[in-house]
Length: 348
Ligand code: DAH
Image (tube, rainbow, N blue to C red):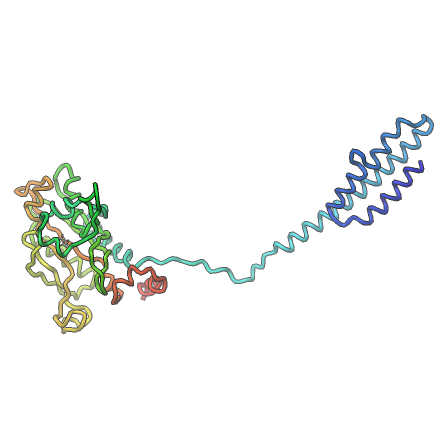
């Protein structure tokens, strides 16, 4: 009996000191664990005489009840405190200003490329995508530019070595003409534009070693220079404004015959002459011509049945015109201050 009273007093004293879950758990072990004080008392029951057993049992149960009640009460209290603490620390102040989500903006080249694509799609063209790594054959030979041809001088590029020495980084999207014609097994009509990156061994304020072109090719029966003129005039006026004047000059490209260069009236001075147009009133923007019969033939077309026209231009130049960019290198420089201003400019 005496022992129960002692344990009870001890328990009451211990309960007073519990101020954490950890201590509460330890207390449970101390009293109800394998060698716990209450457990020990329980094991003594069987050693007692029958007349003492009953009273001992009642007292022991009271002690257990005392323990459990207090344990539960303290557990609830501590648990509540923990939850409140957590709620307090995880409180969100919805009146605080939000962190700004950084929004990307479209690259000026993508903007112009998409505008070009939309224009040609509306005229019934499909977009053709060709690889930047090309064979010498597709980039030059099948466009009538044989090995050693002087036209290669203006298009020096990056060549691969060893077993891939016949491969290079394409210098012109005109390679798409060859690919599209060869892929077209029926050797029938074609109407494609191919925008993409091209590479040359150049670098100054108006030339970059990497730049972008768009190539166009139309093949059908009875295609003439009139189709070429009409298409390019429409394209240039749509992009640069209806008041733009377009001029065609005879020129030379190995893969077209006849060939033309296309000028637009200077949009800065209106044709009077300024530094942009080098005081001529005109700016050269496109190369074009009727696809050379030999080029058609090399890619499996019968030049007696089909004719075609082709054109090519640098997308960078148009971006420079549109956004008054004076140094092409800024377009590829990845300077975020330069690249983020075009959303605003397009809205104006
Ligand atoms: N590929 C030529 C260049 O890079 C541009 C060009 C000229 C493309 C005449 C054509 C064309 O399709 O007919 O300078």
